[in-house]
Length: 353
Image: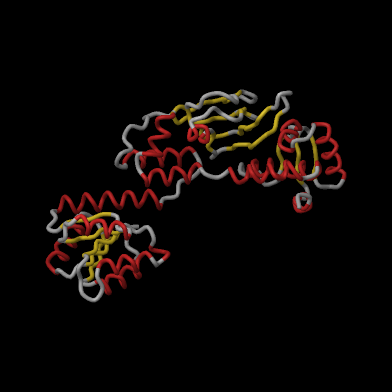
């Protein structure tokens, strides 16, 4: 899809010269001689960027910007004012209204292309959807490195392999890295004074681990251990903060990549406090199955580890075994050769309500 630019200006010479320069630089352009016509073209073509004069007949540049911001499917289109006014108050008014940048007339070709290129790249970063896998993460970091201010990211990220039951970190450790799960599963858990575990979450491929402690500048409040052979990529602490604080567009996408699991954890804690043992075990089975379904497991089956279900449900392994036996007799699950298979998901889910 070609990059399109809408030029709105009542000065014919400037409009045509800008159009010619952008066309020669490989952009597809549309032109309008006043704000009303420009708004009509913007609605029709949804350009990648809008260059707009301020002082125009019929509808001025401020009016065009206000109208654009009230059109839902045009939100986020970079908007650059072209103006002969160079007073700080004029700049402030436009920026307060939501303009992304200014070009002060007369401007040269280098200034025009520099601003157009920078604004389009930032817009592409905000609009781009990154896959939750290693390729998507690397794609995001590569684009982030091209943005102004994000220039010192490490060239090579370490790929860490850990075996089943290996610890990633312990409660009380100091965080030095952000972890991204490439493959495998990592349980996040807390232990009480008697050594009993409570599983807070199970992280799978595409999940980030450890950003809360980094953001809070605190020790880890939980421990993390592999429940199967796993691979993780490691983002150093300095890179983590570089991605967050150097550039707002980069930060927005980085937060989108990382976000997700706090509401789930809070909901699960409430259920543990008020639900019966039967409901808790059903909830734990469904929770684990959802993690494994992300691996393309269409049969809703996974390796049965009673201690993990015990940790998730907050009840003893003996009580877990009794409830699993009940579920099996009721035709909800099957257990064979160390694997649990869900037979009646609908009825199992009804136990949570």
